[in-house]
Amino acid sequence: MTRKMLTGIILLMVLVSQASFAEKASMGDPECATKSASTKLWRGLVNTFTGVGEIIRQPIVCTKEDGLVGVPVGLFNGVFMTIARTGTGIFEVVTFPVPYDKDLGYDSILNPSYVWQKAEDPYNL
Image 1 (cartoon, rainbow, N blue to C red):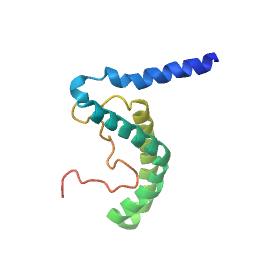
Image 2 (image 1 turned 180 degrees about the vertical axis):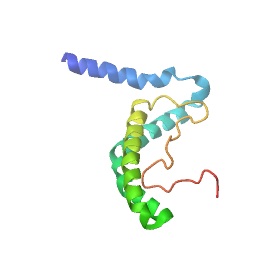
Image 3 (image 1 turned 135 degrees about the horizontal axis):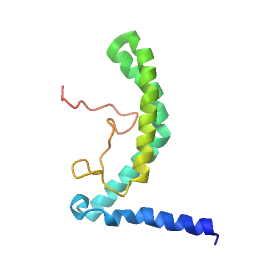
Image 4 (image 1 turned 90 degrees about the horizontal axis):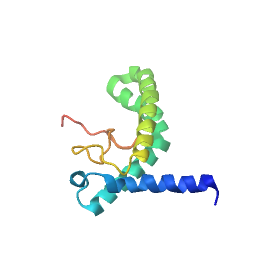
């Protein structure tokens, strides 16, 4: 076994074992925590590879709200949101065993969680 392979295996074991160091109060039921962590990992992987879809999505959303002016604004928003969604995806992949905090837990930082979902109205309008 080469040194690189052994180092990779050790790093992977450390990363996966981080879930056991999380606070008991924020983890709750172990099965629930495992499912939530795997959902966070999956969401992170999906957002890492589909974040570029924001370049298509944002002009559509902005055009519905602002008319024809929404196209250039939407393209600008799309580039920004591509960076944000892809970066958040990478962050979620790296930190999947650990909940964000007691309030957010393993839930998504972004709204919507995936590029193809409709955003939830935070004000319930």
